[in-house]
Length: 516
Image 1 (cartoon, rainbow, N blue to C red):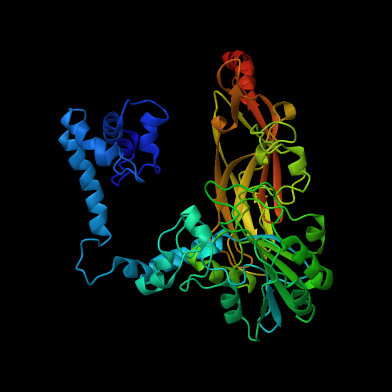
Image 2 (tube, rainbow, N blue to C red):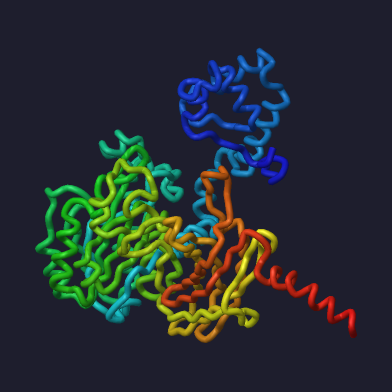
């Protein structure tokens, strides 16, 4: 009802693969596929993902048993057919909608913009970044020729590859075992590799050495890599994970990079620390260690950027795009794996987990992300107050932040607002809002508005079995790249202190008013 009627969603709903069968096989909410089909279709689930029997076998029985009406089935079919027509699946046979999607400019532009915004500049020293295209660079690491790995493990045909290219693709044994699309763990001809994209930006020949594999110890070119690194003006280390390390049904038991990667990084930093950029291609959080943090001149988290990942990475490293990304997960220190049992699911136990509860010092915190520019933050013109106040009777207010690009490059910035409550709860911080600026030239500024709602600051009360206001003095922190603002926040369960004051003085004011 909420999705269809309140939100006016007209698309179709797809179940998680195998989820409808769980209704009777695992959850026992329905007795068989017929009941499960009726419950799902009546709940507006249009497509049964996976090779389940719920709709193929159960839906007709549900209709025959008057558990689902014909109109419900027809409406569901209409929603699916409408989108299929829009996608061109019923167009003439000589028209291939996959090729159309791949070549339409807006789709490619969106893929590139998404990849650009996902790149996070974690560390930048020695003025190494952005790169000078006239520098002699070396590209080293297991991901120098990454293609399918950049797409992660859930995607359609690789960037609209032609059918000829797809036919040439032969699955690896791991892809077969994990049911991955062809090319996930190997080269996909239509995906530009990091080495190819970086070579296009350089005015000089680029030397590439793989150094090692993502995992395993049989392939070792570390000695060759250190020689190349020593003789180059800048080194780009392309390290990280892939779908052999993290995917559905596959978990890691460590946060350090696997195989020989840590050894390769250390060897290169030993001979070229002042000119090395470490690029991490990964999904889950990784740990680097203090040696890497101390010696790498720059560290970039590039995630799995999709079909435009390599182009985006090259644009950021060569300064065509000023990075705006923020870290989506805490990067923990090496000690974390010994401080928390991997089977422990409690977020507050011990040193805690996530940015809300982690009590230690992370290698890089959630929300961290630098820029090629220095940024200034100030409270807005209407924010002369030294503190802010919310109460149950006065639950909302708006506050403004002035953001200025102090240069030297134009760009955008994302401003994050955190709540730091007093220590009684164990919550270290909580993200309560974020805003992005427009593209700002050097010297330009923009005012962003944040709406604060007391419900954002409520916490669970076991005694009351509900959310409750945590009264007291708290702290608001606003962060953007290198800049930070702080302001005291008062939370009150009853009327605000201003209202309490007004109520207290009202009788006195009335008394004097009577004698005017």
